[in-house]
Image (cartoon, rainbow, N blue to C red; front, side):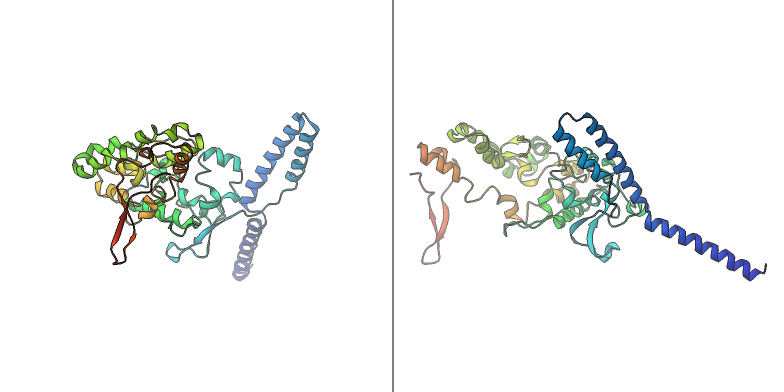
Length: 363
């Protein structure tokens, strides 16, 4: 055999082998193996449920599900995320997350991510916390630069910019609010830690260890008034008489770190973290000697976005249910108006000067 024929034979063999491998990857990709395994496991599970069914109706429903599982459709599953990729991240086009093509078992995902209601996959995807490449379908490429466990995610926090990038990405991914005044900014997401879990409220006492001396006038005023708002609220006749739903409207603004899903809160009153956000990350930076980074975190969402911070509670209609309560049942208006309330400006005189009017009395 001549040298030319030998080279031709070797190249042809390599080309044939490459073609076979391409066909295998194209028509029987690895992600399909994950889906086949999932459906096989589901078939076995439902077959056991059918055998254990106690009623004809239950058995009929399970058999229909079983028939569907035995005719699976193998397909690429993806979540279309809000926003677009940018060239500076070496990606382009629509933002998509295809992790669920392989990680198809939603029940397992829910167990591994107990906060899924607060941090839903269909809005935020997986890569915002775990990293990796969401568009990729091969395991090697998809898992490139990935953070597998919470500890690995937490080790990313070396400076404030890490959190800013994370919160900014969440702001980009979040659907627009219906309220035009409610601008979605990264400060709105300080409630999340880098793992996607709710950030921990550390308590005002931890803040006051330093800030009692550093910002004493501000701290003194806040402790005298805002820290004690809930003491006043819980003694009010309408709060005492109100049902659970009524009290929830009070707890949202007169406690710190209130969680509507559990009904629990971090502290009574409007304390430091009510405005500055949960202090987990801020406190971490202060403890490791990175005070400037902590200061950056504390300012996010507090300065420059007054509506987002103050608006949800300092809203003109927030106390309408209280006004209605006292109008219907009667009582002294001292319970309706906080002791520190002063007359407020409601308009302008004909000369262009602001006019102060007292708050309206309850009829």
